[in-house]
Image (cartoon, rainbow, N blue to C red):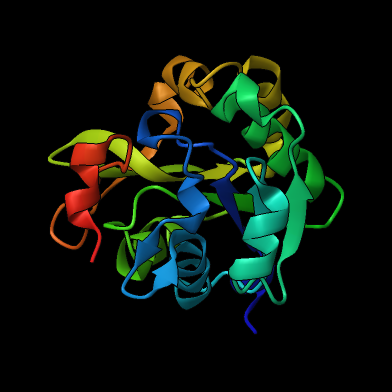
Length: 199
């Protein structure tokens, strides 16, 4: 295991309740015969993240029972209904003090973003001051790598469904953009119509 693999931890945000999907938790939606949570975890590992923290919320017990979370640190966000910001705070808090130099953050409802895009973003890690983001035709998207020096600032501003958006907007000049449009499709599974992306 290389030093970079040790230092960059994967952080999967998988707590959403799928309100616009009839209350079906996104982590349990099936794609290619497996829950979305499994796909995202496998992609983070294939991208070089030796350790992965997974934030669960909606129907966490069912996700634990049905998804292969072996070897992951599972963080339960009891405030998941407050939005993605609460899950990001919980996930970063779980990584604080572990020695990780950065978190590569993935969203469970973006199965079109796989290991190749994640590896490109992870490859932008330099040290704990790193801020790296995937870009699609030059527009910032996911995944995002947050160096540990930024975690406190992100946790202070991550509210509702905005996640790290406010913090990243304030630090745009420091972000390294990595184009991923040739290897990933950044759609979200938010509505019934989006389910067409799943196989």
